[in-house]
Length: 306
Ligand code: IPE
Ligand code: IPE
Ligand code: MG
Ligand code: MG
Image 1 (cartoon, rainbow, N blue to C red):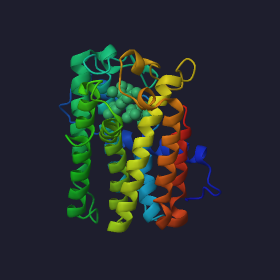
Image 2 (image 1 turned 60 degrees about the vertical axis):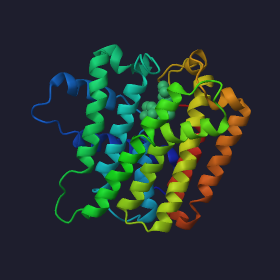
Image 3 (image 1 turned 90 degrees about the horizontal axis):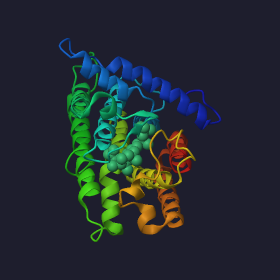
């Protein structure tokens, strides 16, 4: 656990967040032709804070398989996940989607740069993420067929059967059609898929075998669903003024969104998130002590207030 013993989650998160921030700054290599306005909009959202939970999960799954290996190759992969996530937030907040004014404690991209630039900043982040995943490597780097598998997994998690598909369900599923199975599918796609992919690609980059990858995918799906259930709960509970959360509270109810609290109630939703977390942690048993960070991250995800 790289010197963090006994495990201290707060310290671990802080260190990993710093590592990811620095790597993101390195990984965002603008093309010489890139318009400054576009870069400004990208940087505004990408460096606005954020928990960096997807890259941190990716690194933790890498470590669950191989504790001793350097992060050099996996860090750009972790950054690509955060870039895709940030793109999804910019678009999620657009007037034609959730129409939100605050994100990561700041006015949303379209409030600052206009809708046109917010759309394009999101587009560019998604494309640059794949440029980063597929970029030419230093000699001795990752095997090309492994890299291709990583690219494919992340693309699939972002596409029709992943984030984009889930957002469609979020926006278009009518109230009368909404039931628990559809809600689970929607959350699994819009949020769970990218989180599950973060775990899988971390494991792949560490050279995990199929059994290990299956365990990480299982953990990822459960934690991913729990993550969105907690996001729904926080949208109801907030933090009083929503300051730490950095986004508006109560917006789901105002917009009549299908959420776990709306369908199951607060207590039942909380219980389900706890149950999923327990199951996720069980899936880690094959990794032994090396999965302590993943286990603690799962508990953080349900206990978080932001
Ligand atoms: C918020 O994600 C949107 C969801 C998919 C639930 P995060 O809670 O990870 O947001 P940041 O990155 O910390 O801002
Ligand atoms: C976010 O879902 C999902 C994605 C951005 C893909 P929400 O719309 O529920 O998340 P917040 O609450 O705005 O962050
Ligand atoms: Mg949304
Ligand atoms: Mg939203």
